[in-house]
Amino acid sequence: MWKSSNREDDRVPAPTNVPSPSVPTINAPLADVTHPKAEVPQKMADIAHIGKSVVIRGELSGSEDLFLDGEVEGSIELKGHSLTIGPNGRIKANIHAQEVVINGRVEGNIRGTDRVELKKSAVLTGDIFTQRIVIEEGAFFKGAVDIQKADAKPEIKPEPKKEAVPVAAAAAVGVAPVVHTPTA
Amino acid sequence: MAPSFLDRIFGRGDKSASGAAASKERIQRRSTGFQQFMKTVGREENIWVLDLGPTSPDNIKHITERGHRIYNEDLLSEATRQDLKTKSTEPGKENELVVDVDRFLAENLRHEREQFDAVMAWDVTDYLPEEVVKATIERIHTIMKPGGILLAFFHTRDAGPDAPYYRYNIGDPETLELQRGPEFKLQRVFNNRHI
Image 1 (cartoon, rainbow over the protein chains, first blue to last red):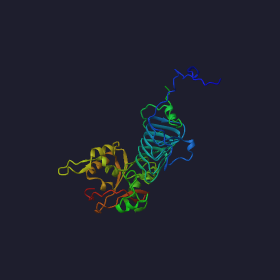
Image 2: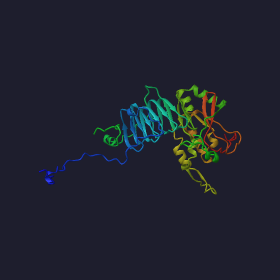
Image 3: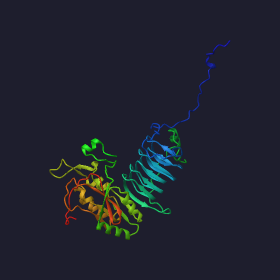
Image 4: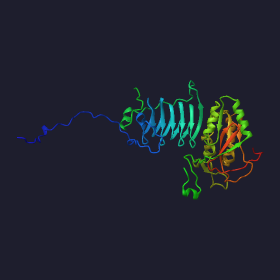
């Protein structure tokens, strides 16, 4: 009476012709979120975080504070927010943010509308445009410092526009989407 | 970071990523040349100042506080980079490594003609490798404005290649604070005629 049925037509058929959602593949392994000995901001929950194994080539922009410990080549725009480059950060980009704190290596011009700080492990090659600057003993810096008042216009030459990283790519590695989605 | 037991035995100092070792202790030094330099800088507005020493937060602070712009370029660290070395073409010295002057100037002191109103060269020229001295002075001359002011210090007697190198930090408009710096070797002592 209660035979188990092994008939094929009793089994739930596997869905066919249903396209599986495309997930962009990312060569980099999952981001490492541990940061021993790093100058990590206290409220990590409020700050977007890019780990040291992540590599980004293109425009990186967002509307929240960012801790960046990976590699970026292109440009970084965080107007009105703060950017912290971690000790493992390797940046080749012009940077525009309200506040910029550098612990790692940066090649590019820095525009901090409020403040720029170079920690002792910082290695910066590029010009700094800001209202206030703090440089710790031990930091390496090659470039110009131009202290600008709040209403002064910056002198940074714009970088040529590069291809932006899709938001899905950032979401796939488990980080908050801080990457600007290009409007096609 | 304090030197380890082995560092003390082998005489290795504490090095940062750029190879620059600096002690925290500072020696104060008054210099009439420096006072004159700062008076001239203080009379001007919004000028360009070039600092050829290691990164000094104090120098950046003192110059920018006066409303000026400053460019920092650690010339000695650049001149002693191993990747800028090449084999000498001088007869009899083919096995010696010397600085590739063209590459050195392609990567350093790359500024517009007559850009700088003032240059703080400290005693850099006493420590530069011989092959880059003339080219460096010529480049500095090119990038300085006519009537610009150059501050340079020179050793008055030969203290030998192990003479300690000091970083120059601006303490106030009349006083410099010398800080034992990286281990650069004194290359020469210029006499007044050479200067």
